[in-house]
Amino acid sequence: MEKKFRLATRNFALILLFWQAFTSAFSQTVSIKIEGPASLKGRKAILLTREKGFAATVHSVKLTTGNIDLQLSGDLVPDLYQLNVSQMKGALFFFLEPGTHIYLDTLDVSRSVVTRSKSNPDWQLFQETVQKTYDQKFTAYTSAESRARKKGTTDSLNYWIEQKTLEYDLLLERTKTFIISHPDSFVSLYLLKNNWYAFKNAGLLEKLNPALAGHRSYRFLKGKRKG
Image 1 (cartoon, rainbow, N blue to C red):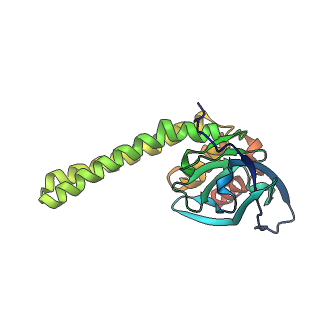
Image 2: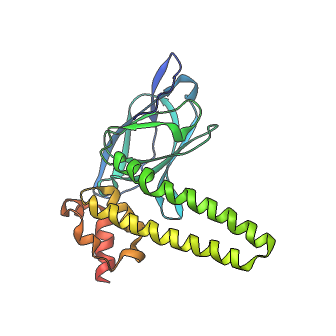
């Protein structure tokens, strides 16, 4: 269910004046729309790609009025991106693809609503049913481990370390199940790429819909498998 939030009376469409990040001969114009309160006009925003463990800046932008056209290599979308806006807390993680529509929250970027992205509902589903549970337990186990370390209770310390390892193994198993049950999803392709060393011998690439083969990540994994 979409989050509801109040926007200023005068809303405007924010144009992102993106500098072209890729010079591939296969580049294409990807149009998206971002809406938000007029007070955000002129703010600096940064769009980043997301890989496991790091983020890379794709575009530095200034929010003004107008339409939004991105020059991206056609084989880079859909994929996970991160949006940050200056002087606002939070970051929005979303699957970018042509036609994506973002409604900026007035206070926290992470609460912004993404629509018209076919892949984003799958990303939200994975976050809610798999990742969120792991994050909560990992935080709890880490706190317990820290307390045990301070007290010098070796048995307790080893127990919580083991629990973290078991929880991570469970995360991988649930991620694998998600990939298998969503073979048509670019989210599954993203998850497979970011957990390749755990899944490289599981035959998951072959279980994905061949329609995903045009994406750069698919070709990358296919090359890794042959290597």
